[in-house]
Image (tube, rainbow, N blue to C red):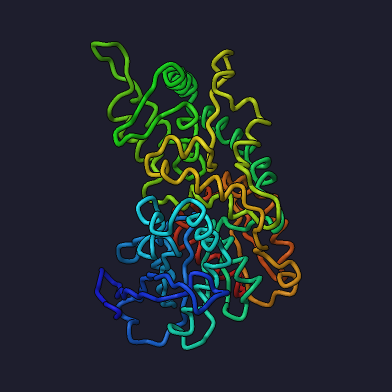
Length: 433
């Protein structure tokens, strides 16, 4: 039963749907999907086209907006918007350390999680679309991983789309995870260099924290082990528009004087715990490399293996010399599951996913080359999370896709730029610019 309620300028309606766990077995096990419909208060009774939003991740539920925040206000000028919690996230049959044991042991859990990639998310959308639109196609807005899902949508069910809008989410169509990370580490190094150029005092601050972590066993509130590699992974912030500033402010109060000498401050530890914890989005860690699996090659902890090709990221070697400590970003490693109490019970499950060799293709080059759906994509210059060269190669592979390449925003441009980013993409898709 749908429930409607109001926020300033917006009428919201909660929707719940039942869909197959495996769309190839429609009579088999089912899971629940949750989505929140938003419509402008003064348009609530009108027959409007639909826009479905696919969140970045993987593993994050849809944004919980208040009123007409960010890009939503622009979308509500002409659409009913569906904010979908992708399967396993938010209220959609969540998959985490508490719920996955209901499946059985690690093997059963890993098998279950193979149904939580872009192909299944697209088929979820197609399963619920007729109920909401009466069968009419809708517009999809895909941010980051949501863009990966959108390209999969164009590959498999273009008949369901009236237009596709992508922000920072054009995937490589055939790159193995190794190729993705081999391209990523040099980008990350450039982002770190830019951070230190802006805040040169952070070179010594980061080295001091790393040195402390190499010589002390630090356990954060809640049981999270803060290793030097975990500290380096805070570089994920550098991919956001304000991330460099946030990292600088974090390092400012890393240490405090105590009767026992300098220690990592409680304030620093508490903030780091929130930044590193996967408790709210464990699927990100579990299937992050699996989103690149498309053939018989296992992902096999790709980010960890490829990192060894870039010895400049080794903290001990950096501290043995006088070079800066390099942060990392948007990668998941075996030690991630050792450090985080929300992930430790799922380590064996993650190992089985990393070893899997039967991933199905997510994209169809031939169908994309014959695409007839209007598509527009924002490509962020030197995006830390999605390789620009990969993105532009894909853009050239999708018939009719129009790009807006910009260095005005980082990867979170749809949040930072809000209405302006969406307005530009809509104009591109409609061939108005």
